[in-house]
Image (cartoon, rainbow, N blue to C red; front, side, top):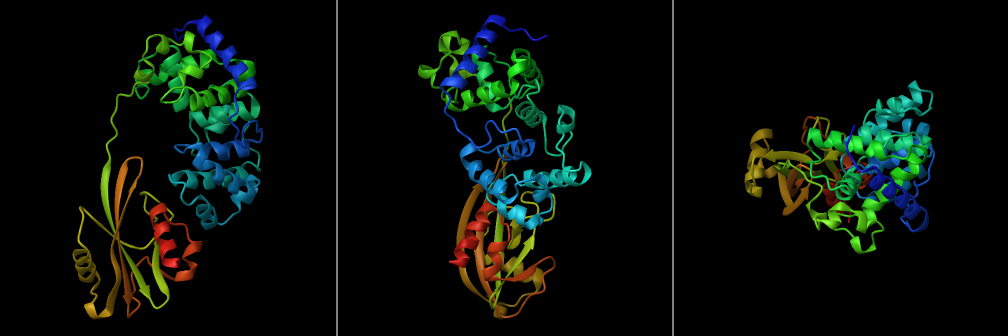
Length: 357
């Protein structure tokens, strides 16, 4: 049994529900939605993604795939193309897998209980609680970054939220104060409250609960929530050769269990550190037996950087015009004008747009 102040908790819940009904003007198309398919779509898309970024993707997905059967029966390349630029592509792979499972194994009927929802691929405790409470008003508390922050401040809890003890404590607290008869409304309200008022830099002056908030009264709003672990960032160097023969470009699909699985890319040489274009070309010539007379450099020295959650990717691009069509294993030659039909990672898609003018 988690230790908390029942009076403070009840007061917070009551005031939060009142705020949600009278002053919360955060509008999103999935709020109030009862279709578990659409709720699931929105929750998967918003994992590690800001609402502002995911909103357009959600609207396009719902318009293109209005039911889970539409999504399950769509060509995978079409789904990935629609997801292009949203990042964290394992979410898209899980989305496709789960859509097919529900459509073909469950007769198109979305699970209606927490355990069944949690068993779906790509669905964790938070997402299962969100779907169960929003679609079916089942009494499961959500616990995302916003909720961690709100609870840590209201009750001033300095346990690290990324520790086993901290996770258990916050989960028990969230469940203990959840109003069972208003689970869906409360869950949406506390997430909205964390997004618009109890933000990382909180709007305490406009907060309806400031004079009861322990962190505010202690002037320690920015001290919580606490994290104990530091994320290590892996640095990588991707040297891309844009190989062109007449009007065709060589591309390949990334099939290994790495970033951007199932997306497309140009010919890649990954190096341990930054390399000058002439060194990259020397490695390529040696590896594939290419003679200098068989290509000319169209453009080189284009460099970009993209930060992922745990990786920092350095890109360089060298555009080559080949006099012969090299047979490179795993690569396919496609007309340049058709590149727009293939899903590429964000930075490569930007380069595709440059190529297409």
